[in-house]
Length: 362
Image 1 (cartoon, rainbow, N blue to C red):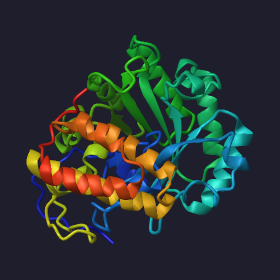
Image 2 (tube, one colour; image 1 turned 90 degrees about the vertical axis):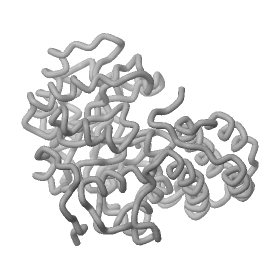
Image 3 (cartoon, rainbow, N blue to C red; image 1 turned 30 degrees about the vertical axis):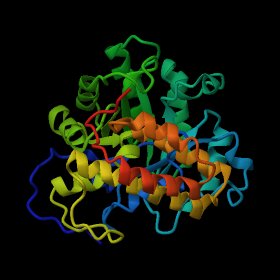
């Protein structure tokens, strides 16, 4: 089934992701504590059924996956009708990687992603995450063994650099080796390890890498609005844009992008024919999204301390785009369960309407 498209108001350069069967080159990133089944279902609730962007899982440890009872996790790994989800693997050992892929294949993932960008110190001690970026041969081996055991596309998500200094020559050599080792595509988070999730991304780098590689290169980092995502593709000739924390503030951002590209079909779970566009419209919709998210969390995780923690972390990220986001988050933290959250948010949204900003407030 294909989404209905009229003459687009914006046209994009060709994307090499089309060769992998992806006609919509925008996606939502793997995010620790966020990219679980309830969040992905929230994103999907703002999409037409026929539009299927890639939605990534949280990092999944290949040390744990082979031994976990995947039916007995805090919640399900996927939800009904979820066909374009991508597990992100954290690991470096062939036995664990192959066993993890075998465990995940019955869930019908679209592909697998290798994490080479996580800067957390407790991951680095295993030579995972961004530590792989420091050793080309080691990282190439991880890609080769993942590709060996995966019947689905394999991607690599990496940062611009370890530490604070960006060496473009090294980055080009590193991505070349990822390509030669079998990676089907690359996502470049255009910030350094030292930057974490803060500061402006070095978008010019991803254009350099995209021009040098034969495989698709997707940009990630510092994408706040639908226009940022589209401008990245148009200006830097990359193959796609991966949206991260802005999707916690604007879970409808992919719908906005689709509308700008001429997609006319509306989400089946919504009565509106247009996504929110103005700061005031987005501010109102944000509170509705928090309410919807609380219900999805309860559906998948029950009204549990675990679910409440997930909601509070979601609000901690997304509320930074609101005018009084810090106050809102502080008050949500006082709630003792999801029912209390819903009562509070309904009251707060009515008494304290506020616009959503273009960029997150730090």
